[in-house]
Amino acid sequence: MPTHAASNLTDESTTLSTQATPHPLPQDDAKTHPHGYAADKGAYVRRLKRIEGQVRGIARMIDEDKYCIDILTQVAAVNSAMHALSLGLLESHLTHCVADAAREAASTDSTSDPTSTDTVDAKIQEATQAIGRLLR
Image (cartoon, rainbow, N blue to C red; front, top):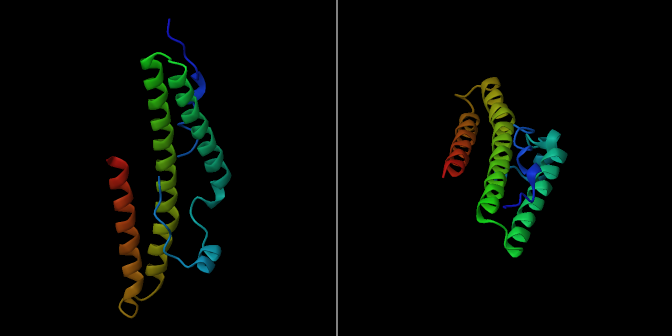
């Protein structure tokens, strides 16, 4: 009979709403403009440590010659957890970084400062690329 080594692996996918590219702000500016995930940083780190444990559990299952379908179930759970983490980070990026750039551009005269709209365009392009990577 197959064993289910880690039955608690799938309950994390709904707790938080990807791999991000480096933020283009200089280090000092990043301190004054924290990343969108900053308020939930501890939760993200805890979730990543949980996922890391799940991956180690999968390696242990393979080492112990567990049933293939049980291993694949745990792989699907890890993929689901990473997907949920990615979506949460993407949502933070959109609601914080992209929205802040748009608000800043709206508060400046775009005809006298074309870089403000360039920043918004860059943020939108960056988010679009991240979404594209998630969908692959």
